[in-house]
Image (cartoon, rainbow, N blue to C red; front, side, top):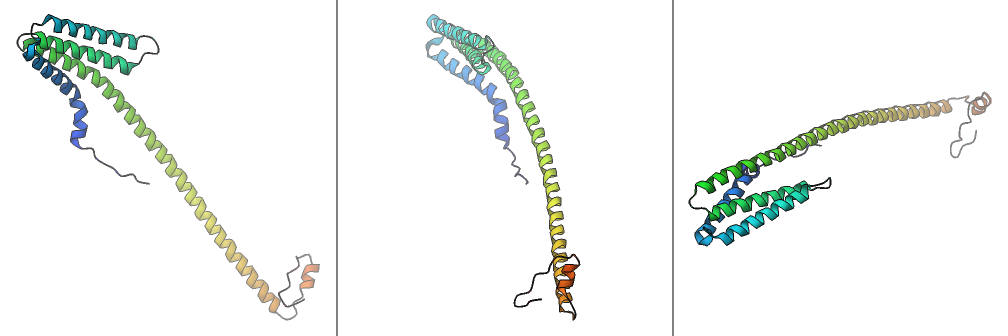
Length: 201
């Protein structure tokens, strides 16, 4: 059975690739808005962001420790820590030089980490497609063999039916001949022929 092939829209394909840049740019913009609304040179705000970033980093370290560590939780915690650190610096600093430098660094790191997951996903998708193609070929081969076997059985049944019809016609024609004695056939070792309805031999 042929499956319908659907092409993905270019926007759906490009959105995951742009997600790291969108995330870091959003953090930078919000931090600069925060800077313009009183966060600049605010020791309390800077201390709060340091505590939050350190807490997120510690949570990521605990989540990744041990054999039962969860990589998704750890990655989320470390990403949150980096975002809080970027927001704290961008909100506290004067000018745009340092925030832009940190934004570029954070974007590069985010793309480096995302590329690893993209490669893994692409490898898994290719392996699944290959496995599906192999299974489809195996099923198609089995279907072809079963189709050939069914056609052969149908032809055999047709030939058997034609033979039975011809045999019945021959026996009927033989019984209509003068001098036909079914008792002699039975005595000669042949099976007894059934008497026709309304007639006795």
